[in-house]
Length: 117
Picture 1 (cartoon, helix red, strand yellow):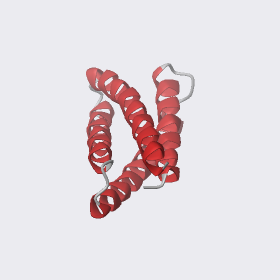
Picture 2 (picture 1 turned 90 degrees about the horizontal axis):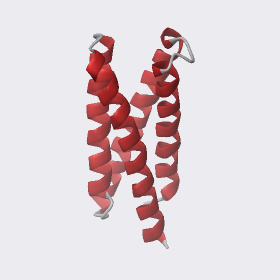
Picture 3 (picture 1 turned 90 degrees about the vertical axis):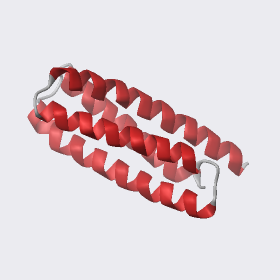
Picture 4 (picture 1 turned 60 degrees about the vertical axis):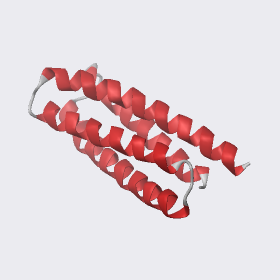
């Protein structure tokens, strides 16, 4: 697997984390940033889904790591939906999952780069 695609997922995840922190700490108007934040999340999930499918087809060892990251993003998205329903605990869960997603993608990027040589 080419690490460039995972690097893109990492950059999008970091961008999303920065947007989420800015909204959480009211540095920006949430109504202004929320549509972009949701769009970046959907784009990240779609790219990651393509990477999972490709890795599974090629029988790469990183496929299970990518599947785990995809599931984290799905749970993060569900928590985001509960934020829209104004459930306060969901915001904390969403933020914590954001840090886990960034860490997991960074770990998968290191693994992919080390396998490539």
